[in-house]
Image (cartoon, rainbow, N blue to C red; front, side):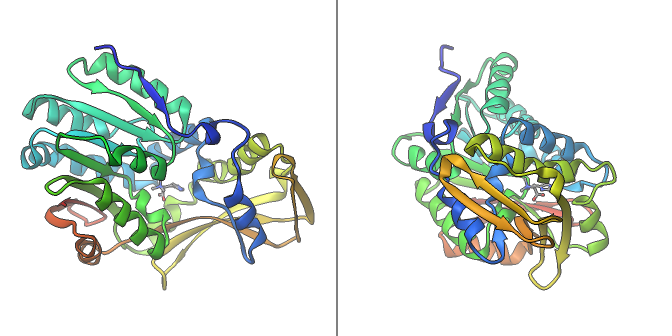
Length: 324
Ligand code: AVJ
């Protein structure tokens, strides 16, 4: 099949003229923060793949186990669908779903969406070889751009899936807005499959974000190198250290970069300067941990009715299939 492997939705994000307003906004606030999407340049996506292999980082493995058990059931519940994945990365776990849809349905189409061009392109090219029955097209851009692009153009039924608990990066307010956008991109009868990391003791959560090999620390620090090349900046990553703590009250992991020296940073392309005091920190990510029943209510509030949920024997991770 002759499909263009990649559609570039966000030329701005790819080029150096990204407006970077979100970076300026985050670094101007007190306390300072940065949007987690800036983790994912090519190196960041590679480091995230390494995180997924760590013994301490249980979410990927646990979700993959659930999919290995129930992907056929999911495919049978939805029937033939256009499969749309938000934040597809390497699409490794997705193969479990692609296999099930290939077996159980006809007319297979897969649209992976990611902001990291390198990993998206290589996984699309590989999947096109390995799944010749599928029509596969990558969409390079942010979630917002992809959902906007998808809004108008589908006659077939659609399953949007969002795995890995990436939804945990959103604040409760952002999460509601996002679910509203999802509901908007679906027609009545379409499906949404959501993977969420469930609440569990701190003793399990904190090591998952403070691994003994320092891969998560490198992933966190890489955000500064990414901002340096994207915006011609002069962050010195050596001045910063990684920290991840579980905030029990808000049921979220919080990742910080702590600045150890007074540091004046300029991001030339943004025409922006910001100073750091020794001891000051940047919040780079929240990773919320959820309750299955509460999430089902939040989905229902957006008109997304749960059809089925699945977990692993320890109830560490959950999958929810719902319908618009
Ligand atoms: C890709 C957002 C789901 O929150 O667990 C992994 C990212 N950060 N280790 C997560 C992440 C540090 C991951 N998500």
